[in-house]
Picture: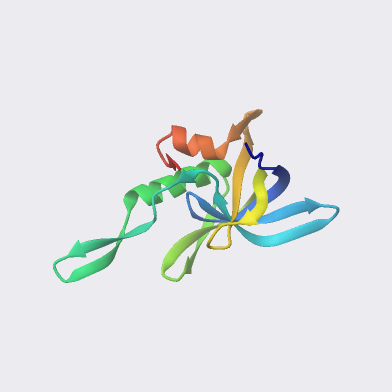
Length: 145
């Protein structure tokens, strides 16, 4: 059995693309910050914001309400502050007006095929630490991989 090292860091969530992809400022320690790092939440898969659907005129990019509900639930879990919308390649991302502090763990400090780091996030809520990845799954907003 191979043991995969897990590394723990502080981070500030700046942008939420969908319920399993975020942008953070990552505190590496020793006054080293990796700004604007994209993360993919480890071992879960949340619905996409848009899916391709068959229409009478052919395939069309269609809003997926499940994807928006999952992303909105993640935003609500992480912050009570307002957000602003930014559109990237035709898909709206939510920018947090006040970055949300989290603790994150990464596996092997390596990226997946799209260049995102695989991470598990933890947030404090009412003095209780919540595993964000597990919370999304337990509340029906993501499936296990």
